[in-house]
Image (cartoon, rainbow, N blue to C red; front, top):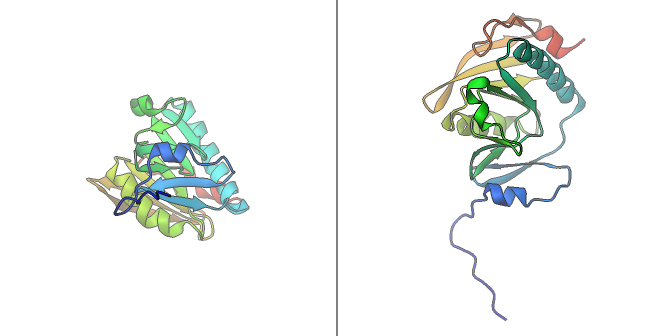
Length: 188
């Protein structure tokens, strides 16, 4: 019986491969053509995500700045890079990348809420991919350390602008007119 020979070198998965994955409740991403699977976030992660999303969504809607989305939503940056960030902001100026199926292009802001199982990928792999594909702002939110790290893209890399910790009220570069009270994000 004939056995096909696998192609030499590394096989890079694409968005089409991603769409063929089973709908089994797992959180899949393709980063640099490699499949990544993450467990469901813990409850603290979900609470912080919900609170931050509510603050951002109300601000963005009140000021008609664009739209805020939360996971799961596919952000297709290239055929080999499909991420599901925790929170996404797409400005009115980039609204053409919002389709009925996914976000096809770079959002203005991507927020990743760190979990022990994803922190390294969020800090290293995803930050490089997001910067290279034109995401302007990147926030890393650590619920356990109660920190928000704000990064801005310069060229194809992110530069840290600030780290906010604990019960701080901050004005981020992405939303300079928003007084972001992190006490509301961390909860009581």
